[in-house]
Structure formats: C-alpha cells, structure tokens
Image (cartoon, rainbow, N blue to C red; front, side):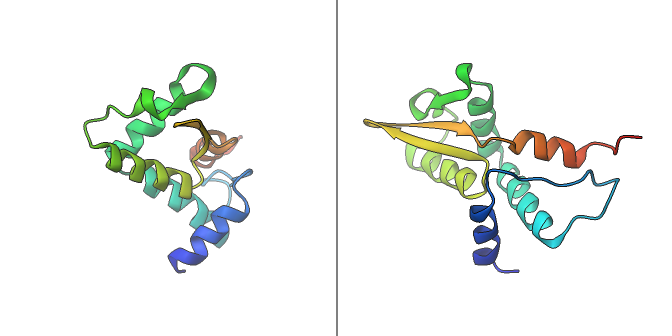
Length: 120
C-alpha cells in the first residue's frame, strides 16, 4: 500500500483508531496500516520525546514553546510535530503566534488495547 493511501486512511478515521488485541484476532489491513503509521512515527527518539511531553503536559495540552527543547533546531521540531500529526497522534491549534498540541483522542487507548492481552 502506498504512503498516499495510508495517509488518506489515517485522515479519514483519526477520531477512532481501534483494533482488537493482537492476541485475540488478526488485524485488518486498514487497522494494520493505521497502527503501523502511528508506531513508525513514535519510533524516532525525538518524536517519542515530543509526544511524551505533550501527553504528560498539565491540562493535556502543550504549547510548542514549552516542549521544543529536545536538542534539535526549531525547524526540526516542527518537522517532527508535523509527522506526529500526519500519523494521527497529535492535533494542533494555532493561537496567535504559538501552536498548541494535544494527543488525538483515543490514540493511547487504541495502542494500549492492541498491545494488551485479550481478556480471558
């Protein structure tokens, strides 16, 4: 499947990423594409740190000005945040000169659920 197709799948169903636990049923092609893009985005140490800073920030929302000190340049931070948004992991909102980020609703639950053992 091409990157264009996988991005369009993510963009059409961002609000509800959902997969059964890996131990309970095989993933559908659509779910595997969606979840692989998310895990691929998080496989970069800088992106994982940025995602963690947003997810753990007080109020569940972080201004880029509060999370950008991850040891890379500002343009590189912007690039990594864009990749996290494209993968359906973050949402963003511009307020004045700053951009605020939130973890996309349901993402953490979907990833945790997929990796958890099926309820016995």
